[in-house]
Length: 328
Image 1 (cartoon, rainbow, N blue to C red):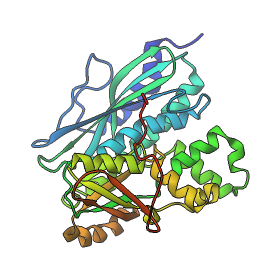
Image 2 (image 1 turned 30 degrees about the vertical axis):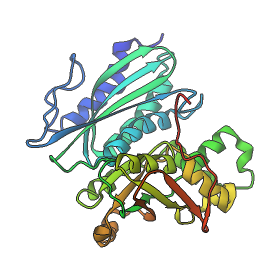
Image 3 (image 1 turned 180 degrees about the vertical axis):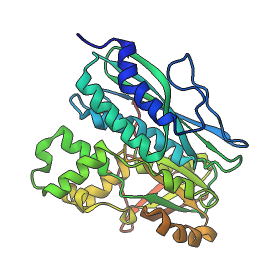
């Protein structure tokens, strides 16, 4: 006999969430009522993000349930990181074909493992029957006037990216075509697989960038496209040097040096941050990196005018810098 909706919520979500809520002072009322009651820290603004993952669109059928739970929260934490916010709570809307207890146990394990890592509490949500889809709304806070946005850059600001973009797209390539990685050693294969299934939201870096970065965007739809979007919101053009875009040894092993940079510029789902820093604050950025322990690389600059200029070894690169579009 399958679980009913309320037993499902109680067993896999309310009980674990309540056990964690007891140690917090910012959730006067959590799961179980019509709405949650949250205690926003005095003098801070609320920051909210919402993303949905749909089977067949964002993850393939048969994906590890732990990965689905992890990614559903990670993409939202990444959005909060891009604003420099302190994540605090999240709500979960889960649409399930059936109340499969094995799936639910593994899904909840992946979800709560990431939640505990970043100190965020599940405070409510919804479950319903239907094609598998997961929507998470993450909530956090920030001091007034401290939020990073896409619109704060100015011509001359340096453009940076965290981590090694393109790895998640490389991992997806392996998921869709197992033969694509026949020549990879196991360490490289595992790296790319992990970067797709369990991306790392750069929450700590986002917080550290407050007061240093002038603009910031989450790299979820492709580095070139997201960076160009940030430049456009800032009223600037963008010059990117593809030769300076960092790529992992695993991605190079999969696609070659040129192919790896092409994937790094156009692939999505990385949960990395692309941000701009005025040259006068570049030294301050370098000083904070030892504490953040997240590699960042300068890959270009904002320019006067509009549009994106992509160069590689001094020559324009022929790639689509439009970014991912669900309806294209």
